[in-house]
Image (cartoon, rainbow over all chains, first blue to last red; front, side, top):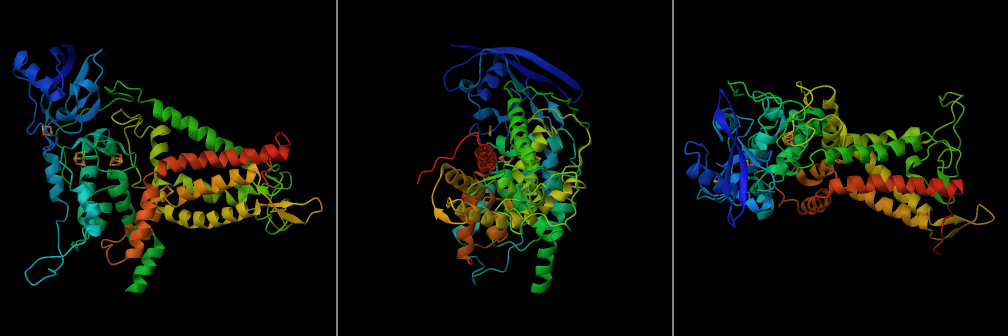
Length: 246
Length: 269
Ligand code: SF4
Ligand code: SF4
Ligand code: FES
Ligand code: FES
């Protein structure tokens, strides 16, 4: 059985450092298995968050060899074993302990986005009718598992810490999901510009690259929202057309 | 907006645990954009060798004023403000349009912010500056003008198409007779037209305008079809951005070399 060396971040809000561990690797193992093995064999107090081990709960987000990834979906076989594998917590959120960060900021941000506001029901029994063509776009965004890896990699939050000005890619797709919903009547465009800081996104697509659900965050959600903001806030022609149409 | 109360770690420039060659992509981008746009800028400042036979370089297309037979209104008129000591450069009159279109393109923006500004240098790699305004305020807020460049770019596609048609009309020995023919240059120009069209019609603003703006597609079948077509090109927008840049350079270079007599155009029929 091959052996893998790890450098795992150990510490809390006051500080910490990488600590070396090694463990045996067997076929089919993922990084989360290795972390559990290290936890069982040599670091009983190592903190890590996980739940489904199937890439569906979004709990086990971390940075593996510097890349934001789900530990349960990163196969050991895909990592080079000739040098230590680094495993560290997400950098965009406050550290609680070892690999566990406090992601509650995200839940607070979600509350600032205007909720779903459906039009009047289409049928007397209080239900609606929708066509597949109309819900394809929001459906892509509903795949989100709230792992917050996209928030972690986004340089606006990660490097510039503009948490008070920018909601981040996760919540831009959430806004897009609501805005493009054929039943929704809410208007989130002014908030996107003024409160939620869509202008801070410089479309560098790191969020799209790390999304484990392969949601095309930048091209399918953020840029279309930016275009809606242009319609409303910057383009004099569409403004004029709106006035003429009444 | 909610805040995070505890201070987060400040990352140093280049700080990362990534072990792969993350610097390679920005380096290749700098080289690719540098060579591509560098060559086109150089070509823009060349007063000669921008046409040969029935071919007109895309850098000078359309030629509003100029000395070639392609010029719409003949040579530069006397009233046109131009320093007398500098030879007239027809490309300068028009190149702001495709230049502005590409400069404000969402794909190029993301690419050059990363490669030239280091905003960020690579994903999960520390940035050189601590201040950041993004496209939220001046000057980059101006990028929102992109759709206006798109309108001009669509007109340019038709003009470029017209030049390709013209590239099948070879001058006879006794000009102004012209006869139908196809040379390698015609095919080079046609390839360029196809690639530039795929780039232009895959534009994100175009995608929005043809249908993306709607929340309910099912009531506008035609727009849904158009949206799907544009989406298909849009998925490869980055690829077409590079291919069309390369084809612009190659077409310009081909015509220039023909005009200089370095190579001769091969007539297929
Ligand atoms: S594309 Fe925008 S939201 Fe996504 S990582 Fe880059 S700056 Fe952040
Ligand atoms: S968009 Fe993707 S990366 Fe972001 S939170 Fe959702 S699943 Fe995770
Ligand atoms: S443990 Fe659920 S996503 Fe990894
Ligand atoms: S987004 Fe690239 S050309 Fe419009």
